[in-house]
Image (cartoon, rainbow, N blue to C red):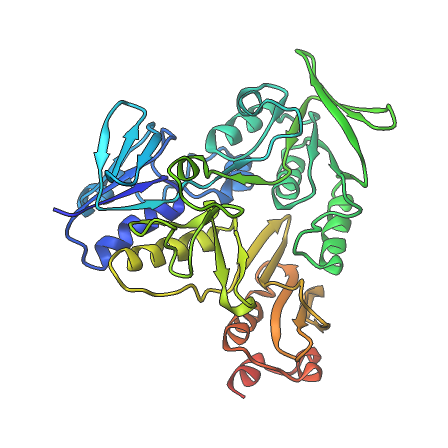
Length: 412
């Protein structure tokens, strides 16, 4: 019987396993994950799971894996891949043979320079947020009046700040760059987010240079370059993630800001695929520039694409990058990559919401970024995503006009 082995039991690996069954694969499927939990969704970790103390939101319950004939090994990590012999050695001493291998090993938090990654994962006063266990530990520390210092003004840091304020904590957010959300989020949107946080009582400090971190039983400190300090009860470091490529690298697979795959998610070894946060891939809509995405929907899309190609479909990546973030009552959504834009058009919407449409030098729509309360921008961002995928060159004046229905531009 053919055996497909999936290393990495997160959203991407779980979606791939179920998709293999949905597409009729009759062979053996084994999903291996280092965490004790069944695969779960990560977006709630900085939001509802932290606020309400929820259990992990599982991708599927145990009964469904059993019904689908998917073997899930939790609390076990892969230690070595032998590509020639097609075997993987596990941390419990077993060697699993495979016919095809999918790596969905994800990413881990980037530690602060000089910070011990192990200490960051298990420390009491200086922590990172990536797993359900991290969220549980942070929630336990956040009581009304607790002073939380967050290093990093990206999505994780800002979502954590919003949630901590709802829990009654005092929050100081420290960003080394001149503004928050400097990666991939237009300044106009970032300004709205920053003002909302300030209105909620979050102290945001940008352009701050940090010399080091300290902790003891009583608290923790951020040591700044100007010799001042920020004292806090808890520090959470949210300065990005590092792809988990060590297993692939040691097996001789090509690495390029992640496990390098082609447009069908195949690695440099023919029987091994990679998908999700751990891999970098070429994106045809943007001149085949290589990209690595840490995004919930990308994990789902690539899990399904990898499953299809493990079964010989030879399909290529066509999905447009899409990101979202919820903070307070605001939802921010971005479709596409705006960093090659030559022109930006603003479209005002109801309830103070707006969307920025980004066009390249030839007038092709390459990205759209929107923000507003609730789902006010969701429908138009979805239509913009379809326009980007279709390679449409819309009239900028029509994009800016609130009464122009985007469907008409998509159909033109």
